[in-house]
Amino acid sequence: MFKSIKFKLILWYFIVLTLILATFSLLLYFSYRYNLYSRIDGSLQSGAEAVASLINIQKPDLIVHFNFTESGYLNIDRIGINYPANNPLYPFIDQARVYGQFIQIIDLKGNIVKKSSNLGDKIIYLREDLLGEALKGNLFFQTLRLDQNITIRFLTYPVKDWQGNVIYIIQVGTLLNEVQASLEKFSLGLMVTVPATLLLALLGGFIMAGRVLKPIEEINTTAKKINAENLAQRLHINNSEDEIGKLQITLNQMFDRLENAFSAQKRFTADASHELRTPLTVLKGEIEIALKKNRSPEEYKEVLESSMEEVDRLTNIVKDLLFLAKADNGKALLNIEEIQLDTICEDTTKQIEFLGREKKIHIETHIDRDIKIKGDADKIKQVLFNLLDNGIKYNKENGKLSLMVTKKENYAEIKISDTGIGISSEDIPHIFERFYRVDRARTREIGGSGLGLAIVKWIIEAHKGTITVTSVKSEGTTFTLLLPYK
Image 1 (cartoon, rainbow, N blue to C red):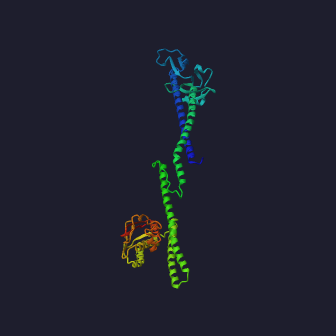
Image 2: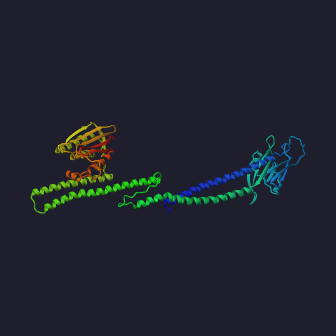
Image 3: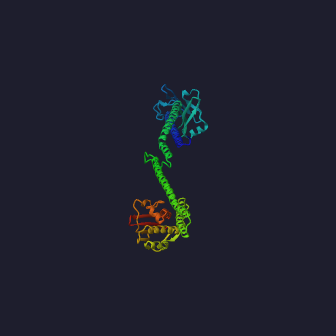
């Protein structure tokens, strides 16, 4: 189970989704926290600016007095030195409302000059390094835990005179209990919703993985049913456009090739057995007849000559089978070198002429000069000899056989044409198959094994060339070979 694709798919889906949700939750939490603190910090700064506006920067000894109202705001009243009410140097209001929980005013030495009454006897000292920052004119926010249950957020705000010198330091703060409670509720909500979402997603992933992998299970089930006795079984394709459908199409194509290969193998085995059995049967029969009684030397000679013909037939079949077996296993190596194709064609034609004389076949040639290709001279000669030999064997008496070799742009073209019995259109697609014969009786009569054209096709394709055939029944056949220069 743990090694199955389904389990791995669900596991990776769960891990990726967990990471995404965890990252999203953290971003959401800190974004929410930032917004809460930003609102508080904005309120604290507004409060500090309101208090600062009440301090007489011309006479900083004039300090304000403040206390909380029932609504939670601060009442701030001026107290201190008497001054003319209409003096424009004192442009502060008699009363202001500042949202906050406490206020402290600190002098330049760090002493608390004034503080809101709700602080009671609590004193919030400003550290020496932070006092130095404030005296430089820098405002800053802090979060401080007074005890286990009280956490405050406060702003240290320097008040400057007209010349930019710090004259007082204001601290405005508020409790963070509500903020912390809100964050705790938000965190609890995330802790509940994220695992619940993961469980639902895991269930959905399990269902989706099952549906996605169902076609693969069907492929597995169908593939198990396919064997030597049931090669016609194929996969049912639900959707040819998705990846599974394309895989099913590819597998069906592979099964088609396997069925064709298996059928060809069975046919090849049957044909090979038949081809080997026939000469052996003939050979055994002739020897048995010869041994039944004493015979004259001439009769024994006749039996031996007939036996030799069958042995030659067996030898040729075995030789061709060995060549094709090596070719199938990639062991039929070619000796590739630069060869003079026109010379090979002329030499082969001269060797085949004596066979044509027996049937009074007229051989014509048209060979371009100086045609060089990369190839195996012996194998190319074997191809030419086989095709020319067939052109004589299956030709009519007083017929014609022509060989044309011409130069093309990137390849050499060889055409071998005869005026023989021809090949029907039904047989043409199969003539390069092993042991395939158009007329078995006539082929045996003239000594063919049914492997020659299969060998020819393999040699041409091993040279990266092509071979095609056109034929008209009772009129003749033309083989066209294309061999590249490189």
